[in-house]
Length: 444
Image 1: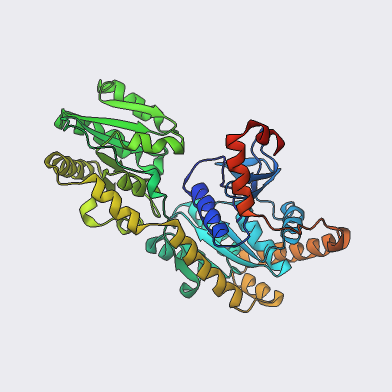
Image 2 (image 1 turned 120 degrees about the horizontal axis):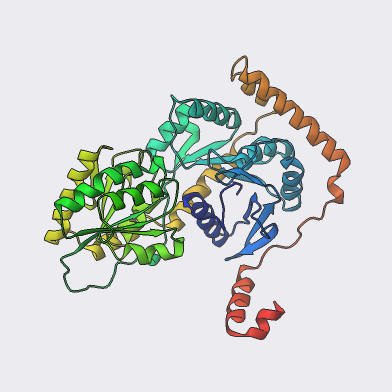
């Protein structure tokens, strides 16, 4: 697994990589993660339960936890890790991950097969999207297979990266249902709490929340908001609360750690998502599993997540968000939504074991397909166009020459290979022993 986005950062991509890796380990595969370092001391090799080995490469981040694309300085690290760990498949994650794209570029030099998972939706009209899409098309020109988390995301990725549709699979996100249990049955309360847990950024539709929340509070005196998250739009929420004197109706929690999200969710009855773009929406799934009725904008892959009786949709406009919220408040007030039944339904819909099994099928199909020769890769890269094709073909050629230099400068026989496999059973015993015995904790 390779991506700029991994723990200790918290997010949907980070959690997806960790949970998929953990379940693949339980299915008997060897899995390692490669990501960038985190100051001050998260660098080098670390281990995570249940025996997941993580390489934190000493690269600084440029913006939004992504490293600067350099194409070449990562190759010595990548080559050493792939060879010494005897890796035969690289799975990159996220369109904005430089490490992921570079891993796909370098992997073919060592005969390693490649898979890419796209977690986001992007547009086609603005300058940033045009540049990002062209880079994505170039990097995925020779990928063996791609995975998207929704059918809408698949259509978006096929168009953006100009991929053959038959090489793109759909495997949704999942969650650990036992971590998101509804609150115990309590005496009926007149107050209805609307929960928002999101990164407070433009694409998450915080402007819609700022516009609609005062109207909702004015129309329904028994409604209060509980908002968790941080981001550049936090100042807009603070100003809105001050302007309309809603300090007692809108509580801002600030940043919320992922392990604390369930405790926030069970305080509410309705979950509000106002995203302007969303490939899947794991926060919606977690809220529904915790027993909340969901109101969301009808964007991206959101309509694919829940049955119609568990969610109300709105167009991304202030008036329609207000309409959908009024509908949800009426449903919750009448008691038409059963939180515990919702939890049981979600438990049956989404499971990480099923996601790992479906991903394993993609891996096996990739490993069984014929690899592309170097000349085929060059031809496919040149087909990007007279300008982009030439640039990325030069990058590909320089990458090959640098790899040949490394083969001479750092011969494979001089590398320190990993000769033993990790014993998950023994690892579990050590963890249990260290929890119970302080002396064993110091020893291990």
